[in-house]
Amino acid sequence: MKLLLVGATGLVGSYVLQQALQDPRVDEVVAPARRALPAQPGLLAPVIDFDHLPEDADWWKVDAVICTLGTTIRTAGSQAAFRRVDHDYPLAVARIAHRHGVRTFALNSAKGADASSRIFYSRVKGELERELAGVGFDSLTYVRPGLIGGPRQERRTGESVATLLLTAIGPVLPRSWRINPAERIAEALIDAALRPRSGIHVVSADQLN
Image (cartoon, rainbow, N blue to C red; front, side, top):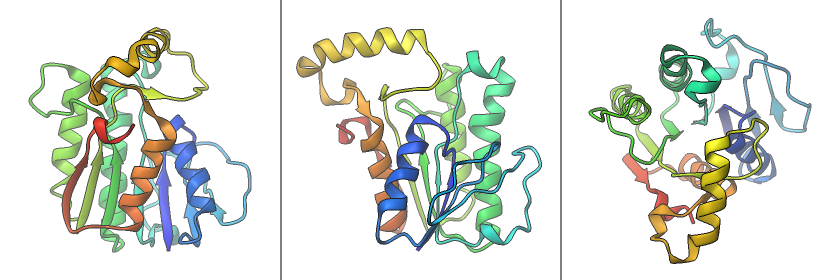
C-alpha cells in the first residue's frame, strides 16, 4: 500500500511517519513538506509550497491520505494564518488527492470540533470536517484528540502547564479528559488509512488512551 502523509514534521505526524515506515503493509510513504526530510528507505519526501501545490505530480496517486497538518494561532501569527494552515491546506490536499483517485482520508482533528462553535479553533476544525465530508471519499475518519502528549519541538507554555496538571490527576479523570499520547493518535490514523471502512467515522478522545 502507498500512503500520503501531510504534516510529517509535527508531533503526531512524526509518529505516523515512524510507524508507517515500520508497518509491513506499507510499501511507500509520500510525505510532502516545506523542508527536506532525512532520507529513509520507503520514504518519498518532495519539498513543496502548500500555497502552490503541484496538482499534476505523480506522487498524488496513493491508496490513502493521512493529514496531521496543524498549528496554533500564536505560532501562525493571526487567525487568518491559522485558518490557512488548519483548514485551507488540508482541504486543498484532500481535493487534489480525490481527483487523483484516492478514496480514503484520515484527519487528525480535535476534540470539540464543531462548525457552529463560538470558539474560533473548534469552529475552524468543524468547518474542515464538514467540507471534507463533501469531497466524496468512500472512507473518511476524523480522529479527535484532546490534549496531545509527547515531546514537541516548539514550546507551548499553556499546554505544558495543562499537561503537568492532567498527568498528576489523570487517574481520577474521565477517559475523555485524559492526555492522549501522540503515538496512540498515530496508531488510530494509520488504522483508519490501512483498514478503511465505508462512510464517515469519528475516533473520540476517550478512545485514544
